[in-house]
Length: 172
Image 1 (cartoon, one colour):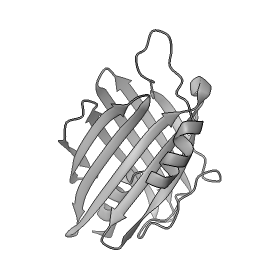
Image 2 (image 1 turned 90 degrees about the vertical axis):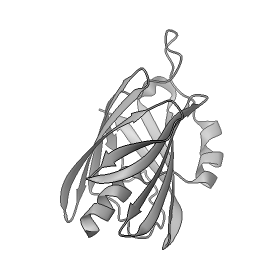
Image 3 (image 1 turned 135 degrees about the horizontal axis):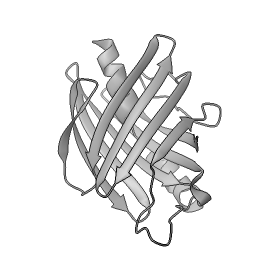
């Protein structure tokens, strides 16, 4: 059961509001002239050394993480592979970027998810029950200029506490 909780936390835990306010203005999205929104498609490697994992209860930094993102229209498919001391897990999930709450499956767990645009920032808000405890994660995805980097600002709230995380990724 603890692995399911870790899987949900690892897959859906979002960015910090304070970090989002401080960092978002400094980041700009790479948008091609033909595209109305940033395209996050690609393979992204987490830069563990440059990321700030904060103090989120029940969460430990991974040894490695790779996200494969497939974005087409309103569909956003994300396959996250996380390597921790306890082993490797792969968590696929597909969101619809339309601002409507939908149920998605993450690691065998039902998760209420809303994906929407806020300017050039992608918002992913999720809510799940894990072992009778509610987990709320709010992520803000921002592309760096040129699209070679991505920052996920994450705010996590659980009955055990919450926290902010800033995840830095490089495009592979």
